[in-house]
Image (cartoon, rainbow, N blue to C red; front, side, top):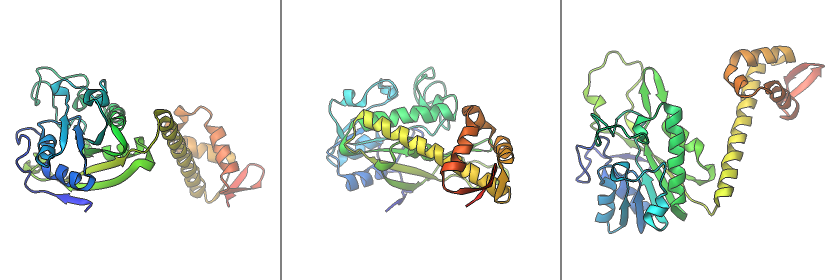
Length: 296
């Protein structure tokens, strides 16, 4: 089943640990993936470890509050061997502060606590580091996973699960599960008129590690990012030409791109070359006259 719901969190871990995940989630994963060795590098209060050991699975729990830093320390080195399943349940951005005053542990906020990232860009980059660390600790053919939710605040929606998927190898993603949230603190608060519905779900993303060296992994990620960027430019230019009536001169196309995508221009000083490249080589356009381009 790809949709999960557990109204009762069960006896695992500590109910007072904010964001504590139900052990039912982990046990469902274990029944499906059948690990002999499970590692949770962000164990929190230990729900996952208790759930694993209850099923007779060898389990190792690590966490920042216990001295393990997933952004600086190798999971593989800490465990001493590859695991069958490595699953983490990180903070959802800064929704809940874990270290420091008012948090779950520590007198001061830890600089590598994922709940204290500067912004979403910082969080997403650090999550990629964490997931690559998990992947490295997973045996080829084994699975690495993350339980993650999205966040809306101040009118901005942050889709952390989409970023996780986009930043990891596309050919290793094997499952996206959706879990309903129950008994959240936000559901017990009174709000004014809500334009959009409450977020009452989380995602469980599962990847299967392939036989791929670090060098090949980096090459794969670079190639996928390049393909994604090319696809974005093609979509932008096609939308521009469609908006201009399906046919336009090059000067008008430049102006429309500059007006609609100023952030891409800053990132690519040679953006006009990219526009001409798409028009000339994508096969989607014909030049009806010098400098005039139309949809093919």
